[in-house]
Amino acid sequence: MPDLDVELRSPARGESGEDALPPVDRGAFAARLWNPLPPPATPETTSEPRQAAAPPPRLQLIGIVHDTAHDGEQILRAALYDPDTDTLHIVASGEQIVGVLIAAVDPESVRLEVGGRPATLALRDEPDSGRRP
Image 1 (cartoon, rainbow, N blue to C red):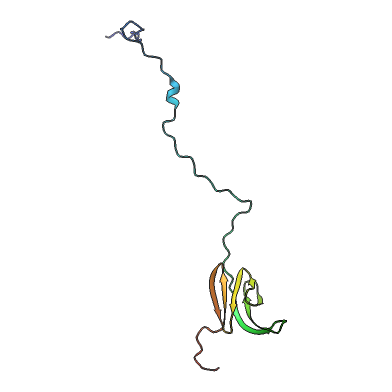
Image 2: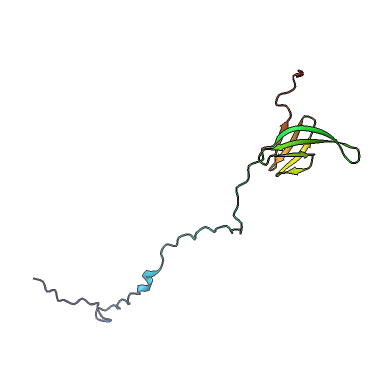
């Protein structure tokens, strides 16, 4: 049977003719070898949470009214019904209601800008075919 009581030791300086190995620095093994990317920067949060954009109002063109201004000028006004608020609005070109700009009012239709996008409400869905009711 082999002798198991043998002591293992490194050769001392000068015994083997070579310099002895320096002691192991265990701190070298604690170094990070892989540095993951930092987490993405989060945008600054505001004190108020962002709300989803509200859907455009469901305005209905009820009629076009010929009105006279204080100076005697004729003005076309549109009667617009908002079913969400159950309100009838009488508006002229350039006015704004419920976030909608009234771009123009003409005798047959109203041009709107809803969130910067143009829209048109017409009195009649079909072109006039010359028939009278």
